[in-house]
Length: 304
Image (cartoon, rainbow, N blue to C red):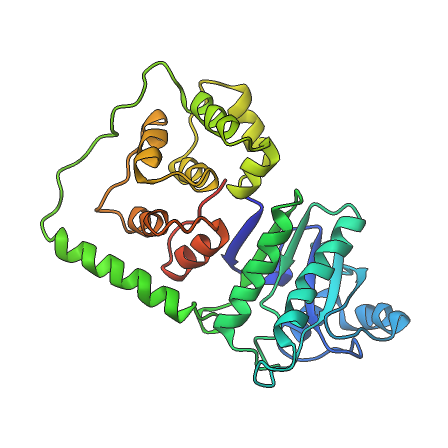
């Protein structure tokens, strides 16, 4: 999927480029920066950085990947948190966008980011995470690139507290209404003559949405979308089918109909289903915000 949020070690990512949360002098530091230098070969990487010299806050530069699995390292300097009133958010957003623009200029297809500025630079982790998801999301809506946001350890991430509480309350209400296990439910009846791909393309056409707009909104790789489009018998996974419902901004009934074409149904017994349903009922169709919330609840993400 274009934007993945994963728990891993960024130095072990097999991508075209990883991003280093650097300091302005491009010297080996602590945290993520120190780990990247150590894994890449500190002396060799420092030589490359010294040839560049320095990097401004919100800017990005590129070196080779040295001993890393990644071909390149993109170094970007995040802002130090000073309360939020000194342009920190704009500078942090610029770190992600400039890094992605550099990757695009070099023809790279995959990039992995750490959570920039959330360590010793003091940026509140919930806000840093939301800025990262928003900035990367805005880029992949317009560009075909696989981008991973790599979270190292549970302590390095905090969810958006307000959104987390709202969704938690919705889930708690569900638990009250469904104390008894619900009977197993099949998919609602759908038009037997219309397969998933046919309905997907028809709905997109009715909304005058281009194909790139549909699969990017759905956080779906273009190759998977073209497979769905070209093979009328192809049945996507439930997460992918739901991602297209979000991309098309369908209401609850329309979502149920689209899922039924792929043989699925939303179930009150599944927390993943209930979280996605919350956003659909609220008419909040930002798939990256939905995935941010799913990640906070340790659920699989939408897309494919």
